[in-house]
Image 1 (cartoon, one colour):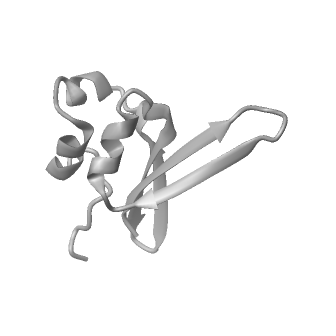
Image 2 (cartoon, helix red, strand yellow):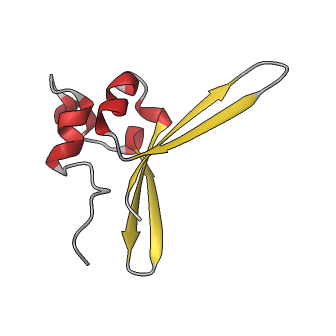
Length: 84
């Protein structure tokens, strides 16, 4: 399992949380300014590892001026198949 997920909480009296799982990196460009809402999933052995994009210490350096989709394609963020 590899991929990206976006969690979009809505704060109101009728609170709703929307989770979107996609393999479409261009969708990520819509959330460039909201890295706290992007979760990267990776298969590690027999387990799944989930990490929030905003937890990366090097996030600003990685993003620089590149679209988030390009950074995703580079493989720097993880969550891409390793062929195993």
